[in-house]
Image 1 (cartoon, helix red, strand yellow):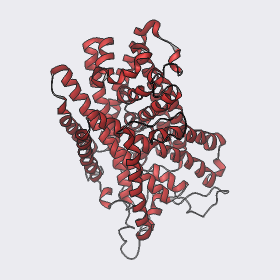
Image 2: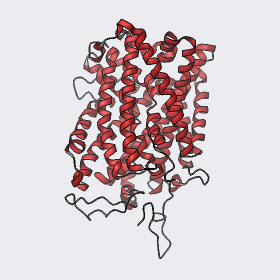
Image 3: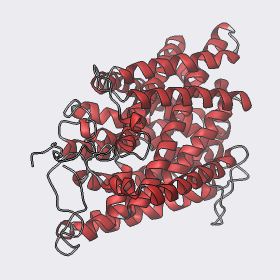
Image 4: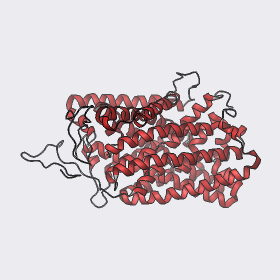
Length: 518
């Protein structure tokens, strides 16, 4: 059977579960679009200015060490995702990998949890738009910060429009926006390092300046690493665009690894620059200076003057819009993939005739983003809503990363024994699992180890919120097994690639592969 074909049906009309699914536009995205899907989802400028500084409240002047730990851990899981994407390029990405490697039921739960993270990611980013614009207008022109919700809504509508225009237009915008934010923030970081002069020191790479009284030493590094990991989340988001890539197996694999490494180095440089310029002993208060926007309102002004303030404002606003655009791409592709196999209503698999975009998912993302952003922002404050949703995202992604490392081990041991490499398919995944375990317990507020201290309220609500979502998923999974068990098995399907033998056609010893649909 030719690549990309769906088997023709004969006989009676197919049921709703058997109809050939809609197809995303194959080959619509080149390598640059795939790469910047990951990079812009990471939102390098926003992560530098907001996510990592949250961790500085715990890690102080030693937060650069937390960033390095997060980079190493992320590279481990990036390696595992790259190895899985090589054989299973699919819009389902995470859940497809786990379903084929471990079990379809667990794969469903992965897809369920992954979508929570993506939906909350939209809230997280929309709230940031409101914070950045309203804070800047308040500082410069005295406009009340209560206008944050107006900018949040307008930003969400803009991103919805980009998504509706199709993946080619959306990813092209992402390339331009992503390149701009990286160049601006990197130039500012280099300026800060130069201006720090004799204050440059390697001592910030140790625990000496982890000086929070409640999180001293390595305890502060681990707490800070939660938000450093938040900064890395997104390197894997090339994977959901596999079905629209020119060369899915090659491009997704390279994009995941390259985005993680390149942006990780970018974070280390930026965190070091802000620390030595501001002063490592003062970093506990860094997140609260400049109306909680220190990179724009303090560092940019000190380094570049009023012009720098404007340039960095544009870079940060650009970054969060690009990030929300990338999040929309991933979220709607995951909803599309789950609708395609009837884990969600089939309407989620509908595509617009003109642009080929999954418009039902786009509308769902827009409504949830605006509704939850308003609720959390008014219930607490916009900044607290930002920090709370950030913690929820980490609490979802960290266990998913652990599972993906495990999936890599199991997949190659069971189905591709001839390709099994001890370093790529055993050592690195095991190290990846070990690296994320402390962050999981810290983010969930479980002081399992002596160096873990529970997070304060309302950040501590993140763990129970994720647990409640997973419980709903388990209830829905039980319903599906009772009424529609075939839909769970469908989580194994890969919709592009060569025809492969069904499960059982080959054992782990002979290199048999899980069932897929070519």
